[in-house]
Image (cartoon, rainbow, N blue to C red; front, side, top):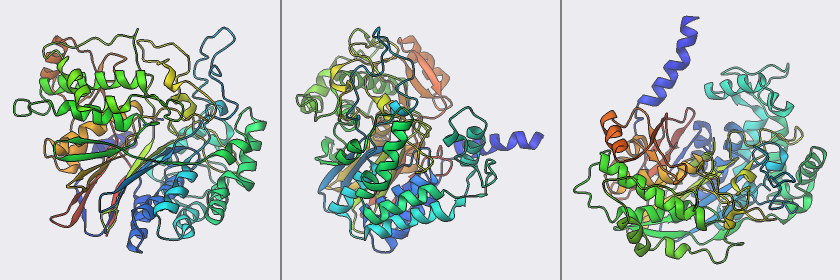
Length: 559
Ligand code: DON
């Protein structure tokens, strides 16, 4: 009994307090939240596939082995830069269904109905993942689509040994009051929850993946899959129709670009707020005299938090789907002048106060997943995709076998209502049919001398932009190796609620006291971010990778 109780603690300890070693490869590398999926991607690289091919195979594999966030029922963003420096992005963010309305999450008195935008089928956005991977393949892929899907099909059909982390989820879902789909999600043929090491097969998902393998984009958005999904929606109170699915297209967009000193930052433009906010904060960091400020000092936390506060206020006020907000002032927000104005208004001795009568934020999400890939030619992919919460809407069609997102919760649910707890009500991100909800996902590539240097990203809901920002700063400004940059102390401030989250054991009590004396409110968090990063050292001719120690199943693979 005693040792049973200790085991999880021991495992958490090992995963949490060791800074994992960096991994080195010469020809190509995949770093993801799941070692099996990283191996799938690395095999594709070894077969001669490029970074986009490996990403597609990794993404589909994650949809099988990392179902809490890897997905075909969600959406995300892919940032691509080739070894010679040209770049592009693929936006496969979910869209509001055609039947969605601005007030669909409010009752007849105009009151928000708690959690309705996060639970059940109304919370589901039209999935984008398959369309995005298909489009990226059409533009940049080199290997046959079928070969990239086959590993995922086999993992779903033949099964794989359940990890410790997934076995814990199996136990929890089985003993929960979730819907039948989730209660049975991780069960064996006799209907009991699978244990660690037992083989988990997903026959319905395997059939869905085969249709995608054989018919590409249309294998998901038309035919049997679309019909079954629309039927499931209609029978269970959802509003996504076959028309919604048939209309969904991924969009190739110009990346958002900024600079930090001699480096170029290439990231995701709206409908993600990630790239613009990251660049805005890096611009503010350029104003700092780093000879006078040490990493993790009181001054460091203060100016980083104040920069975050300002960037998140702008984010809340201005950002949404660009196709519905043609006037968004993104160029101004990412200009050096704007950063300078914002930065000079920081009081060096005192915390500012976030004013909820102006703007704010909502809750943090629970799970998403990021992976980074580089191939032998230095082509790089930074891809983050999500179901929004861990296991998304925690429901799906038993005939299709995949979990549906609850991404509709990323829209501003109540027009005009912005409060100090962090709900935002600004116009750019209100619900409208076919609109993409604003995201914080920040898949990023930093280039040095015009070529990919650092590939990075993370889950973490609203914290994503900030943990990416600090990891980039750690590498570029503090010269940390990638594993240290990922593990180093992180904070998060999102304007509203007006408080700094910090990694509990990594910020000294004295620093906390000093920050409180300046007027900051501090709240510990166990860990912020789950970064997956690669640095390309061109002089040595190697890829150096690290997966965040907070990822129980994560891992680097390459050759
Ligand atoms: O797009 C977004 O910003 C959120 N739906 C991401 C959610 C998330 O990262 C949850 N992860 N921990």
